[in-house]
Length: 461
Image (tube, rainbow, N blue to C red):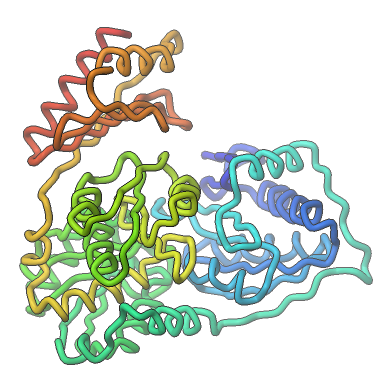
C-alpha cells in the first residue's frame, strides 16, 4: 500500500492501514485540512468548493467522504459528479467558488486515487500553499460546524457541456471546416470520463463517424491508463480496421491528449502541444512555454513564427507560473498537456482536440503528413539508482561545471544544450533516483547521449 502526501495533494492506493494507503480517515483528514486552509485564506466560514471525479471504481466512496468532510466544516459543495480535470478547473471560476477538488489519480492504475487541490482561480495550489495544508492536516487544526451551520450540497451535471461550449467559442475553432473534412475517428477513453466528454465534443464539432473503444465510464481500465505507445495497441488496430483518419486517446481525467495517425503509427505525445501551438501561433503571435523535459520541437516551431520560447521547471504549476510571467499565448507539457490561457490555465485535452482537428481539416493533409512536417526529435528517458550516501546536489553542480561552456539551465536540476540536442538531469522527489532525459534526432543518438552522461554521473558518484 502507498500513500503520498505532497504539496499538490494526496494520492495513494485504496485500502490498507491508516497512513499507509488512501484510507477513509486519510481522505477525511486531508479534505478537512484543505477546507480549513481555504477558510483561513478567505477569513470566512461559508465558502463554496467545486468537486468532480473521474470514473475510478473507488470514486463514489472517496467522493462521499470528501463531501461529508467539507460540509462538516460548514462549506457549501457543488458536486459535478463524473467530470474531467479541466472541467472542474473551469467550473470553479464559473461558479465563483473559492476552490476545487478533483478526485482522480490521473494516469495511475485503477487501485490508485487522489485529491487534486485547486485555488479560487481554478488552478493548482502553489507549493507554499500546499505546505500550509499539510501542516493543518498534521496538527489536525480543524474546527467543524455545529448542526445548524453545515454546508449545503448542490449537484450539477451540466459543466461538461458548458466546457465544450466554451471551447467552441474560441476564435481558432472552425466547425464548418471540420464538418466538411468528414473525419472518421476512433476514440479510446480507457473506460473513464473521456468516454463521456470526447464523443460529446466530437458531435458538437460535426464529426459523425466516431467509433469508441473502452469508452464506458466504469473505471475498469482496459489497459494501463497512461497514453503511451505500448498501451495503445487496441487503438492502432481499430484505426486500421475502420480505415479511420485519426485515433484520439486521453488519460482518465482528460487533461492529457495523444493522437494516433491513420496508418496506426503514433503522432507522438510530445508533439500534441507542438502541433496545437503551431496552429495557434499562426493566428495569434506570442511566446510559448513548456517544461525543461519537453521536446525542443516547440522551441523550433515558436522561433519559426518569429516568437520566443521559454522553459519552466517540471510540473504544471511551474509551467503556468512561467506562462503568466512571460504572457505566453500557449504552453503545456510534453506528456500531451495543452494549456490555452484564453480558456483557462490548465492542461485540457478537449481544447487540444478541437484545435488539432481544425488544423488537420484546414491543412487538408493526413495526420502522419502533419506529424512529418515538424522537426523530428526523440527523447530517451532513463534513471540512475542512488545510494543513501550520494550527494545528488553536488553531483548536479559538478555536471553543470563540467559543461559550463555549453548553454546550461539550472532552473530544475541541470539541463545541458548541445546544438540541437539536450540532456536534462533532475533528482526525483519521490524516489532515490536521478532522472536522465536526453533528446536527439533519432532513438540511437538520444540513447547514446543518455548513456554517455550516465557514465559520467556514475564516475562522479
